Image (cartoon, rainbow, N blue to C red; front, side, top):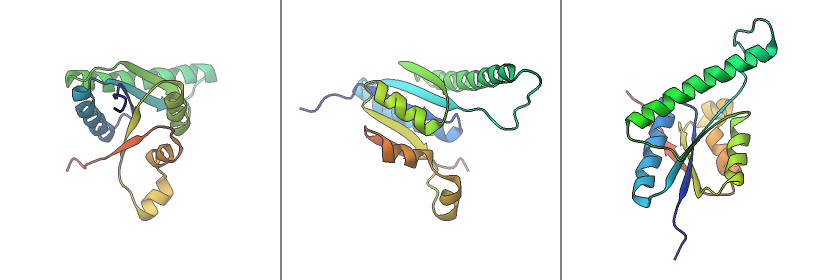
Length: 148
């Protein structure tokens, strides 16, 4: 008999699309009794207003990321979604999601994808595609449906 699924890692970029992926992961987790774990990887942004000490700017960016992450978690909580853990990490999203997936016993990763093809995919790249290529565990992609 296969091992039961116990822990699901959901990577988010805090968009409405990644909320769709989270809802899908939740629908999988509930009947399995699996724990949901959320990860958001933020990075230093060009164009973030910097006045004075660069360390102060870095702390301000981290506070901004924390506020956005907390707001996303609150939306999920209002929908009845509870997390085993919620990870806020700075760095390159692909690298940090993969590092986390190797460091803890997750059964699979859930990530949303816009399903771009052709030139749009070529120029924008795909975090989901990079995670799929490099992950050591299964990756479930959720095709994001437009809200229109």
